Length: 261
Image: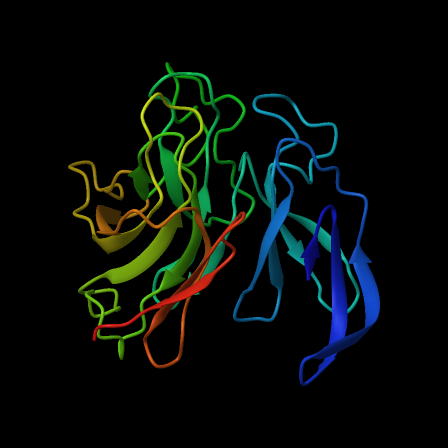
């Protein structure tokens, strides 16, 4: 369970949770906090840790990063840095670990919200990603982007048995993910409050033989609105039967289900 600055493990029996064990503690919360937990195929946990500020050099390198965590011992470290405020991620077989990351505020139309593909030990630009250098030298750019300051949050892979629209989920034809977009407080006109469909497809190599795609990692993307006027959607997951669930944050606090019927 991800808490504010801590990661804990519980034993579960039905709907009862007990025997709490603190695995990681002491990560500072500020502008943002520690968010979702995912798992890699080898069992390692990926914990999304937000920055304490809008733009700063963190005192603790565990802020503004993706952390790897051993779920038994609590051993942990930096999996990727320069990740300002990542809410969630998902492992996609044939593609890798894909995660959302939300950029700095108060700089107009910079930067776009990002969908990133994990490269272990890589840096993803923040806090050096100013408008003149959106992808600073030596860092990795996104594989998909969305409207600045709208907060891409929950993300999940559309399963192939889902009746909602999407691709075949293989390296030849591409993959379809869905993501919640919370909405903006940093724009004059309301934006976000929606769910978007993200199609990731193989990119053609550049003329020099290097990987193509907007992030230079061999993938192109197309992001489209799937559902709008949803309030403030935050967590998002597909059920095993292919239905899409999301919950809204705030006074509403409701769990919704989207089906093809």
